[in-house]
Image 1 (cartoon, rainbow, N blue to C red):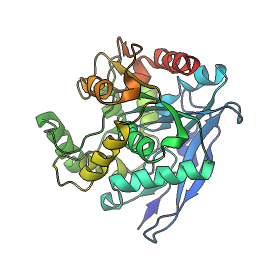
Image 2: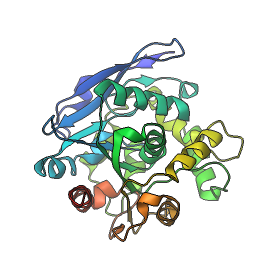
Image 3: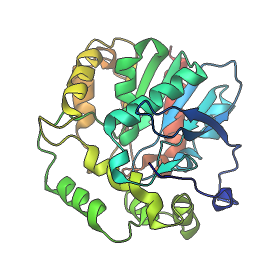
Image 4: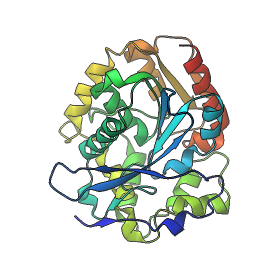
Length: 302
């Protein structure tokens, strides 16, 4: 497996992103090279952690507006870059990535940092991976905030629009990361912010992880991730710790998934769920301060 590492200079002077880098080394159980995963770690180390998980094709830069709000409220805030994204290592072949591989890498991350009492806030693929983590390591998590995300099992048709997105990500000669994020924001991004989302990917060969993610969403009942996700749902349907949905009102990708989560997860049987006005798919960009406040208030409610 060829592993790429984005030069540190690519991350110099990014607007709003002045966080010290931290790293862990992950062991690939298939005997392949170790991988370095980057994460942000802000706030008091003794405080229960808030774990923020990004999705496709973003990276920890997505949470830059929320981190200061959470730290100011006294929380330890941990924001990893998934393997293939941000400052984390990037296997260079699409075939190096799998749904299970991402879950296993993040499980190692939780073990190495020995995190407990976690408040998870997850969006997009951060939820696909994060909800699997909650199902597998439920004792490590205290509560969940699900924002514009879901956990598909391959038993439902994902629709024509998703298939078109999957085909595009697989075949387009140049995958325009920053522009993709911008198109998923209701308010758009500045040129500097678009450049920041492009920063981890100085060449096309660095984008295998971003191209892989759409291919890994289970779209048929016999997909490799279908049965593990069904098993995860069995655990989630027993989850009685606090579970909150905080979806935006302008996301066509995950619209309606909040109602499914609320119906099936026992911990979500509460009247606190939020719909944030003015947010697109990447609501951390459009309504990040509001989402951070939702998380702070949810934690304070116990």
